[in-house]
Structures are given as structure tokens and as C-alpha cells.
Length: 213
Image (cartoon, rainbow, N blue to C red; front, side, top):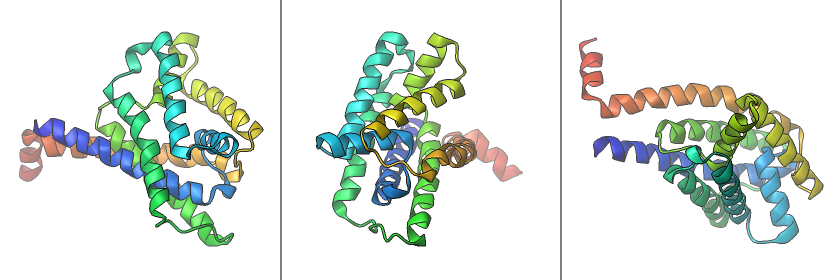
């Protein structure tokens, strides 16, 4: 039970932070967003609803496709990820506690902070081991089906997503093309750190070894 509670605490805290980071980035969206957020914002601008709602709808669409391609990457964590990050983002935008764009250096600081938080959040919720998000699950399924590497599948999918978002008038800037280079290294470091922390919090043997050391 302790392990279960700890894992889901990591998972939900990560999703909450991810939603907050996305809300921070959206406030300064003119600098550029992650390809998926470019798509969500473009759909919001074109058809209404909210950015978070489009995040949920796109996630559900990806789950539907992955279900027929390779459903092994779909589990409870996939659905929770899909249904919660978008509403969390909408909630923080609704609270209106995040600074608006100033068209000054503070906007760059805010966006890089958002990227940092989202990278940490990704490591936190993935370390929980509850399940992959719909976008990651879709790319893993595509990788296996097409024999592309995971990185190749990610690049291909995000390029298509970016083109669709751009064609709909989504916010693309120089930062859009830096997301992967910034997020991936931080994500890898934080993932390993949170995995070790999870083991320490749930494994009494690990604690005893650390105390003796």
C-alpha cells in the first residue's frame, strides 16, 4: 500500500506540475510552444472550447489509434494523463496567477522556467511507473509498427503535428525548435533521480544500507 500511494503521489504531482508548466508557456506563446501545444492552441484559436479541452480530445484520438495499432502501451496511467493535464492547465489559466506576456526579457525567463518545470514534471510522473502518456504511447506503438527508432518516430510525429498546428495558425517561434534539446537532458536526469527517490521511500532495505553507509 505504501508503494502504491508513493507511486501515485509521484504520478499526480507530476501531472499537476506539467499542467502548471503548460499554462506558464501558453501565457508567452508568441515565443513558441512545444509542437503538441502549438496544435492545441491552434485548434483553440480556430474552433473554440479551451486549450485543455483540445489536449484531452487529441489525447483520446491518439489512444484510439494506438488501441488498434499496439494496445500494450495503453493502461490506466494513459487515460489519467489524457484526462488530467489539460484540465490542470485550464485551471491554472483560470486562476490567472501567472504573469501575462510583457514582450521583454521576463517572457524568455518565464518560458525557460516552464520548460524546466515540465521536464522535471515528466521525470516525476514517469518515475511513478503508472503508465505512459497518450503521445508517448502513440509514438512507441508507431515505432514498433514501422520499425523506426523511438527518436525517429517522435521526430516524424512532432513534425507532422507542427505542420498541422502551423497551417491552423498556431504559435511557432524559435523556442519551438529548442524544446527537445532542452527538455530531454533534464528529463533524463530527473527521471533517474526520482526513480532512486521512489526506491528510497518505499524500500526499507535501501534506507538501512544508506544509514549504514
